[in-house]
Length: 343
Image 1: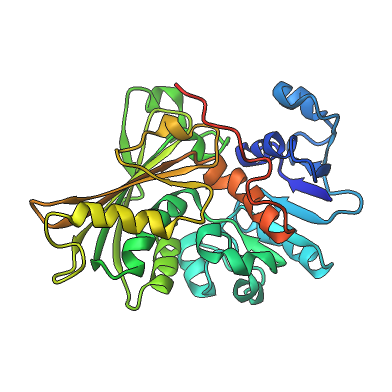
Image 2: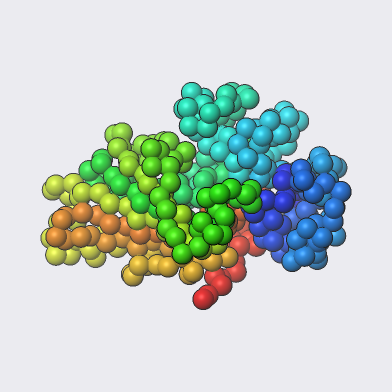
């Protein structure tokens, strides 16, 4: 099959090329980049020079599927004409993740170009929406933070183990901000420094709430706080919630029951590993895994769940390829098998 990539010069776009290069069923037939149009891909990214591709201003040729790695609003504007032509799309931006247009406008500060597509889009978290993704024309690739938060909380929410007041504390490497330059991602500002940001509310919060509310039988109150860490790749999220009184995890064997429940929940998910000790971001660097460690603070009767992933792979490009594999009936793991680069 022939695929195109819009905005190959961003971090997610270049990761897509790296992953798809070894996909036996895919030919990367067309790539675009706004600032590097006319240049060879290998001149912009020497590590990708094995592909003899020229970056074009617009997609060219007959394509089966398009990945869009543009920022929000610009992505929808580029993708909607392709959908109208009948092409299948995996959108890595936030433009089709939220189901309510007014909520999108509130959090992203722009009107959606065509809200009719919000209802048709399938949220591309494969572990939750596996069946719907297979028949989708448009898949909204999840955000990196929501991927870690939703996956680590989904089993507890599904089994009604916790009270609805939840705290999610997340830390991300600098690549999550993209390749654009800003004072907050300047080396001198980030190096040997840790900072909280979006304290009044991060744009990924409604995405987390939307998906967990779908799993739960009630609305969840989620406090979500993000931090920037002086590293290139990786997200580590820790969630806290009080255990529900009279629930199945009371007693001395509560931790063992919790671990078994998480193992069962993700038994058929090839890219989620439930761990028996807290995971580290380096253990997911360059691969498509999400590592999850659930436990109980017995002193406070509180659930504590830690997850980590590579924000550019499972949090972006790898997840996009995983979605493509499901859409076309390929093995879910195809081209996503490599292990982490450690240390």
